[in-house]
Length: 459
Ligand SMILES: Cc1cc2nc3c(=O)[nH]c(=O)nc-3n(C[C@H](O)[C@H](O)[C@H](O)COP(=O)(O)OP(=O)(O)OC[C@H]3O[C@@H](n4cnc5c(N)ncnc54)[C@H](O)[C@@H]3O)c2cc1C
Image (cartoon, rainbow, N blue to C red; front, side):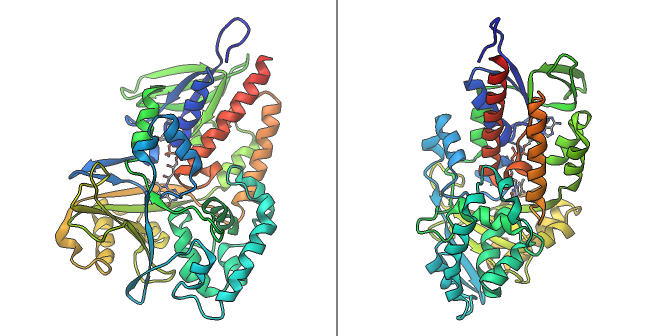
């Protein structure tokens, strides 16, 4: 993309997580001059982890949805399609009365057979498709704010009303907790409706969950190799230039200050940092928006284990209300060339929201010990087989009731500011939804907007 005179518009992307890297990759391919600023020494944001004892230890819940199309597209475009895909299928198991029971909660027939669902509740599941059809025109995971008018009820109230308590405790909460957390009394029902669309929940052909064959961090590294990424360089403050465009104040690892000018800017960090660095540009409505967003603590514990646990990878879910610090855990037997060596396994435990919040300021070793204690109840003898552990903690957006209405007002302000010529864009999970797929999709959306607006400016 070049302007009269031959110069290319310069776009700066702040944050080299999956959202920022996706946006930068698309724009660089469209011939924009793109610079990515990353505060840390490594790229990948929250999609990072570490190799330990021959295992890739994730810092987040690693199971992906079978319909995660943006992520798959990103991998294929980088030539990593064969390395990461097809996803390694994960079997879903519900822990019921101390027993592991395989379940198929993606389809309605399977959902009706989930232990814990009461006999008289199963026929109520027939309402699912009618309800989804009614809301479908408002449900677009690429534009979650479109569902704002449905955002007035909690997930708990929605599910209890239409499908009953058993469905809430044994089916929906265990299904949703790895993406949105388990605080379903506060979580918006829109989170469930969008999750249902992205996973195909209740449809005849849902997307089967699975694990990438190699660490997702490799996707970030490969993307970064083809871009101008300034590592260990944090954006501190962004100002508008009188003649248009932005000036970004930066600081590198040696604490040297610098600055950078650009025509358009994508801020792809978490919401609190985005609000802080862009503060001089924000309208009062945008400041109120960021102040009203809520976050929750997400904690995962990856454990490298000696010996094999079962054949297929399994996601073991505990019902809502079970007395455990752990909400779900994944057991992934190793395989040749994969994320864990053959003959060994990896377990990733996801903490309950209540536990994560209560223990968020505790030292790593204390949190690890507690999660391991809870996990031992379900994986006897685990303690003697541990090779390494890796605790992941993150503050992630919480999609409580009202979040999608906030997003809709925010989106309207963005349209107005862009019409006035402000070339500032946002990407990341607070605008796109939780997880790697939504982060990647939000990067695509930001890149589309930049291309459209700067293309129009050049005409
Ligand atoms: C332990 C853990 C559990 C998680 N659990 C969940 C979950 O249950 N549900 C869920 O939805 N999501 C969860 N996630 C988050 C999920 O991985 C994210 O949705 C996704 O990675 C977000 O990608 P992103 O690109 O938007 O942001 P990030 O991956 O956070 O990337 C932002 C990047 O910006 C960089 N940056 C920050 N400030 C600056 C600055 N001033 N200048 C330059 N660069 C800067 C950061 O270093 C980072 O690399 C979890 C993550 C972790 C670590």
